[in-house]
Image (cartoon, rainbow, N blue to C red):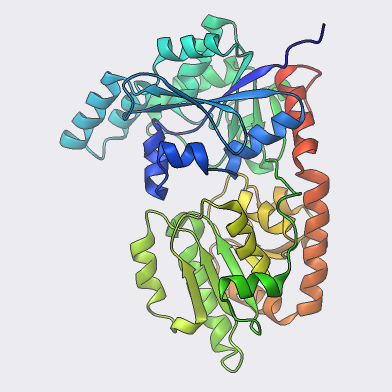
Length: 423
């Protein structure tokens, strides 16, 4: 008799579904029908290649009873549990009386997990392990305790969240990190921080990148993509895509750097293509108002359609990632898979995505928080057409070798369900 496929429960970050998805205009219905890509569904698809079934578990204040459905693009099961009443009351009280209190924010987050409902859902789906999106979060601490009660191993990844809401979380965080089954970390610097800061034994640490569907994300016909998107055929295009968070993503640095790039090339200015929206959309509009309109094109929306986002990347010549903070930069790997050379700031996770070879492995790494050097590197990438094509091909090879779904999926299964840790 063939053994049943193992089942892992994936718990995305955030206290409840709408905390993140409302900001990008994604309802539960849109999530069910259209949402793809990102950490979550790249993990789902990578695990599927290794014969692992998944159930994604959210909580939401908009459901009064558990909601269950199949995610149409991947076929994975999704459960949405009611947000606990205590969490809703705690959040309302904090907003009213002390909106800036980190301590109250921590208490509120601990109340966001419904342990009994979550335990019932795990049993219902026959889950063999749990995987939390972030370990620097109250949800992880509660889930580790629940996992011990249910005799289920709990793992977690790091995708770039900030480190808790207050120091009050630290005792429970330390206990949870030492009690969990293992941590999957894409960024080498972050792995070292956890290893030394929390004194986590090596046996619990796995240095593993995020997976990417390199079959779907691949080099496309640049001319055809530009015609479909009504982009200029005869200009060099640099693309940035992601959530619009000016400080975290370094978009202020990018605008300053782009000014210098275009001012030095007024007779042949390249085009900066921005794709995405977020909480800082309004201040970004103000920043862009200082640049001539013909220097920038901004698609101010969250692009649900992964094929459309692929076309935007296919239309570009160069990608950039000027972030001040990253976990493991999915946007960089998407660009590499599409054969784009990358100009990126040297923050956590970037060297793990691009490797140590610089241009020979996919991109140009510049010091963080330096608009001048960023501008020089972008100018070089805009001018060196042949050289950047070679860099882009190197990045594509790296994506195929290190980030493909089946490559990472096999390693994930080994970490979650036995066979030792991958190093």
